[in-house]
Length: 352
Ligand SMILES: Cc1cc2nc3c(=O)[nH]c(=O)nc-3n(C[C@H](O)[C@H](O)[C@H](O)COP(=O)(O)OP(=O)(O)OC[C@H]3O[C@@H](n4cnc5c(N)ncnc54)[C@H](O)[C@@H]3O)c2cc1C
Image (cartoon, rainbow, N blue to C red; front, side, top):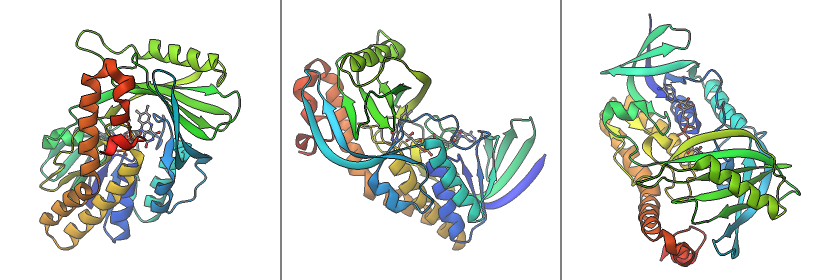
């Protein structure tokens, strides 16, 4: 059994964890970052869209960008389409996560892969390697950036109550596109379908909830959705690379307890209506790393409360609004075409 000590232990090397680790290391703290995956960012479970605004928040090389996106087209159940300007990029998410982790390493972070955080005993975390080896890491501050089914969240009793399952494939595009497309359809209960262009291909997927009586028929609905897009002449009806994952859709909740902070999907920072989580993961990760470093520096764990205050200041109102719109949309689902204007982010009525 190996024993390590550090100022700050970050669990999970996704966008949230690497951003937190980097921010803390830049403040001169000793940081260990662990991930249970053997390779950062693999496998990809993401539609791979980021808003242009995010580029200003990260300082890595940008070779993860595949194409730029001009805006978003929303297609309603009756076929009406509306467009807004929403500059962004589709990316290779594996390269994106790897670029952030590499920047953290370059700043002095120790990265342990194939390392699964299993349990906590006070300041000591017990970890298990994929090869069966065991390790403990004692840390002054622990940052849980371990995704939607957070283990760290369970240790402190702060977990995601609502998670929406999502599924996705890659399909060839008939011709290049420069808009993302969002499809609302009463059969995709509680969610939506997406087509995100990525060069010559597109990520096509959907997130939807089950009902009390029926689990969501994700694969069946996805195949139907793909046929519809093929008939519309947008894509070829052939697909590869099935991937699936869970998207938190929660009200804001307390994510700081004693010396433990949660960030990104672990903290439920994902937007409950759109499911977009990369931007808040990076921004809140940077905040968490900064406040963790300050708390260590001044030997004052009370400073971690400033992280809670700061992320709420930035995201709480938008998350509360989105959560209430989500509830309203679900309880009026059969009137979707009529009520969607109040329940989707590209419409003015959403903000009224
Ligand atoms: C199908 C799908 C499509 C999506 N599309 C988009 C999109 O286009 N744009 C967007 O902005 N958002 C999208 N999202 C959401 C986005 O992927 C997440 O919000 C984002 O990944 C959150 O980053 P994170 O660092 O918090 O968590 P993650 O990226 O999930 O990283 C968590 C890391 O923790 C590791 N880990 C977990 N448990 C442990 C443990 N016990 N010990 C060690 N390591 C552990 C995991 O291996 C993982 O690497 C999508 C989500 C899904 C499921």
